[in-house]
Image (cartoon, rainbow, N blue to C red; front, side, top):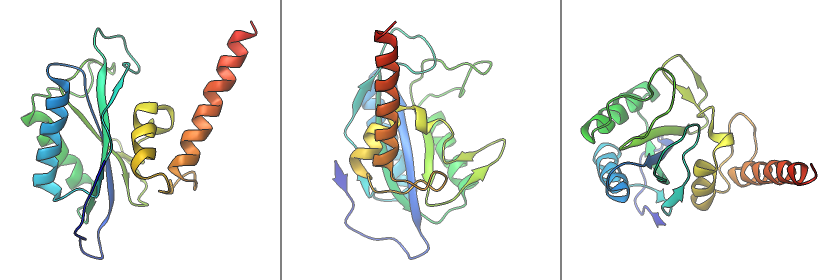
Amino acid sequence: MRYRRDINSENSQTLIFSLGSNLGNKEKNIRNAIELLRMEFGSEDACSSFYETEPWGFQADSTFINCCIVFQSNLDPFHVLERIQIIEKKLGRTQKTLEGQYESRLIDVDIIYYGDKIVNDSQLNIPHPLLYQRDFVLIPLAEILPNFIDPIRKISIAQIKENQRKKYELVQKILRNI
């Protein structure tokens, strides 16, 4: 885990991305994405460890490498989205989904949070609407920003992660009793 030493302007807000790859040299894909993000947004505040995870929402032959990374930015959220889509394309990403279905990918960069902004648009949703269900986001995010307060649920990332763990344990207990 790395932390940034310099501080951006007072108008900057915490910008949190989740990165994932399950094709090719997955770790290199993530590292290349981080370098391009640094070129766009400057030095990161923090970068989580890399985690190997199972595919979520679809079947695939290979696991993912995932991490979360934090920057400061004062850009409009839609401008941020444009920039990360350009980065994904530079790294070989061709489309986000195939007919609404997830598929294997060289790189995926998602905006998870942008300060306390809430955006609900056909092109962009912040906070990311599926983050609450995704351990591959919650675990690395809790590693680097456990006290970050979710602007919708009004609780910390650590609490969201714990609630998710309790829900999973409940499901496991129910399944074992059948």
